[in-house]
Amino acid sequence: MLNLTALPVKVADAVFVGAALLHMENPERQEFSLREIEERTLREGLWHGKVGSISAHVSRHCVANSKPDGGAYAILFETRKSMRRLLVPGDPIDSGRVNGKKWPEKEALPPPYRHLVDWAKSRFDGAATGIDVGWLGSLVAARGLGLAFSGGASPDDHVRTLREGWE
Image (cartoon, rainbow, N blue to C red; front, side, top):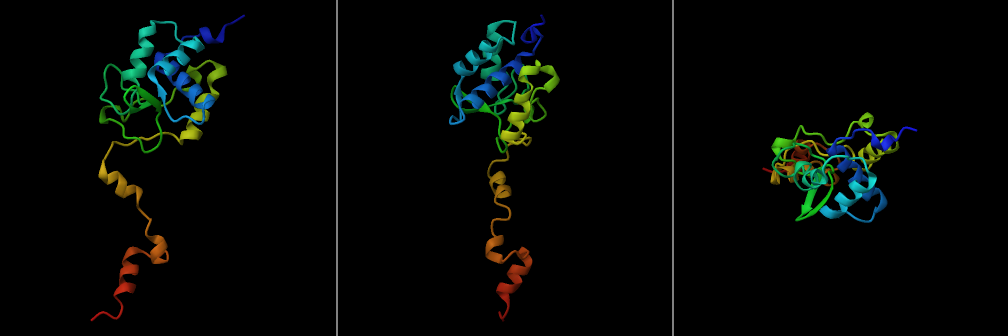
């Protein structure tokens, strides 16, 4: 009988599986420790290389908001020291990782794990793809918030209405 979990899986893809399973199993939690992600990844038995490779990917190689260090993946996000979660829309991504892998290819995973890619994409809406632009990102996110005050009119029309009767 073919052991589907014995098929070669890249370490970054195995880390994605471990993190996705933790999120799925613990929907009330927003983040997980490095150790939790490493242990969950190892428990699935998808990675057959050195255990230290998983630690390196969880702590550095897969972390979207850190400078690339041997890998330019953008799968995880460092929420605070030694804590990670899967990347979500709006997370700042280091410029060296913007084009990095954010999701495994479904075909690269054994069939029992392929649903995790669809689950994560639907839950996290495809992950962020932009560079952190700091305060400018907040302005872009606020776009359209004033429409309720203007009755849906364009900003120019709204200002013209406010200025009617001015001398």
